[in-house]
Length: 204
Image 1 (spheres, rainbow, N blue to C red):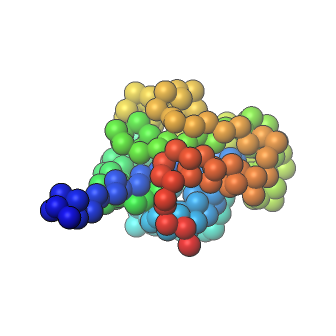
Image 2 (image 1 turned 45 degrees about the horizontal axis):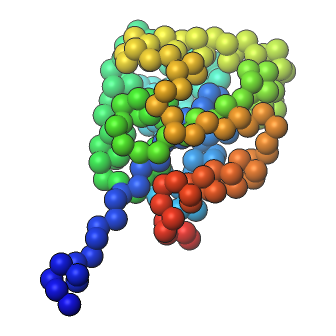
């Protein structure tokens, strides 16, 4: 056997980005997909929460972003882009390590590499899911999401000049989750990843 024959061909590191507006289930799904494929999972939202905590905010569980504290921190981010820049710098660093799944709104635009997934759902369906999750009325969830998403879009338009939730150019796969449950979304994405990213990803 020649030296060239005995060399092992290096596997290209895996980078998967999952994005979607609030109420699409992207954060829970990202953790599940990462565990299934033995990838490290990094969340832009979680990283921002850590910065909010350092800034004096009390961080609660799921649904914090729709809370008064979460909306207050969002207003601060609109005025000061340093929070988002710091988080995005960290995520870009994690991406360089490879074998990662990034739960992020910005990485699909900032990364050249990676398989990028957008989870789509109608505004009313997402508001209903947030209302159920956070134990509030549909009307409350509707108004909070409308305010939150308008400010979030302003942040990223100002920072990177892309239209969150409207520009789908960077994405390799878009899935409408309106009529799918969490297990169905997971199964579909596993099939897509198996058939497009790498047929031999290590599964645990």
